[in-house]
Length: 260
Ligand SMILES: NS(=O)(=O)c1c(F)c(F)c(SCCc2ccc(C(=O)O)cc2)c(F)c1NC1CCCCCCC1
Ligand SMILES: [Zn+2]
Image 1 (cartoon, rainbow, N blue to C red):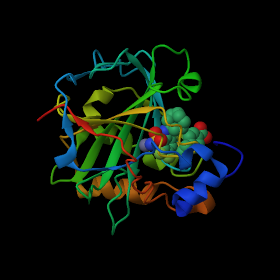
Image 2: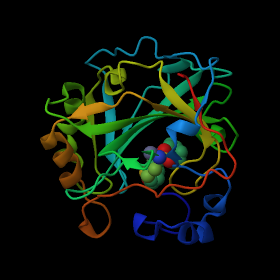
Image 3: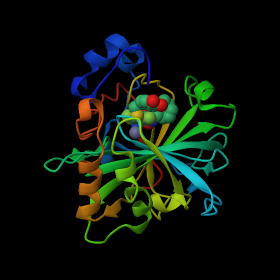
Image 4: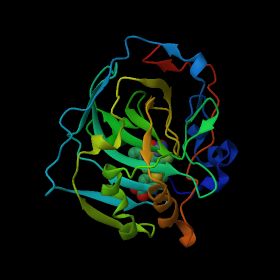
């Protein structure tokens, strides 16, 4: 786990976390509410490039329940470029945030709207050898985020993960799943996104994350969303639900948009 004191989403207001993890009380925290009308159009924000994400299916990827979310470890040779980044980033892991039957659970909101869920693909700057070194340096981390919405169609790429949730329903459990093209978990349109500087949305809340939030959303079927909400257990065998942090104030930061 992280740090010696245990945190939970129950104490999700800043005061709780900040007492044990000082960065959580900082001025560049995530998530935020994105006010689309206030976003600044920045033409230098080129499309995100995810070259060669297809992996041989004989390769296995580790899926784990860390008590707060489900995490898929990614090969570090998957690279993130374009996007106006000063240097390439290497993949580390992806994980999800979700709500519960009655409530949506995205971390970021758009004009006050909370979506059913949110995927985060976490990368670290190629200037560093490990994510541990990168995560404490400004710009050391980049997270690609996309909103999950309830739609009518089943989302096949997401089944690669959802098919294995039962194997990791207890905290600490892990399983190995056949590798697949994880770029399929992100929207088709990687040219339209919001960009701002923020933090990890979990303790230790390091303020080292370059956030990219795609404008195009991802549709999952109601059954797929329900499976995510009703399968994973964390502390004291409680269901992991509503694993999102409340929006943090911008404190003078600007949100940029790659589109007008
Ligand atoms: N939205 S986010 O990216 O801030 C994020 C969350 F909101 C998260 F909630 C999480 S999971 C909670 C943090 C955690 C707990 C246990 C372990 C472990 O036992 O290995 C690892 C991590 C989580 F893992 C992440 N992402 C991680 C943050 C941990 C440190 C940086 C490494 C990868 C990104
Ligand atoms: Zn996250």
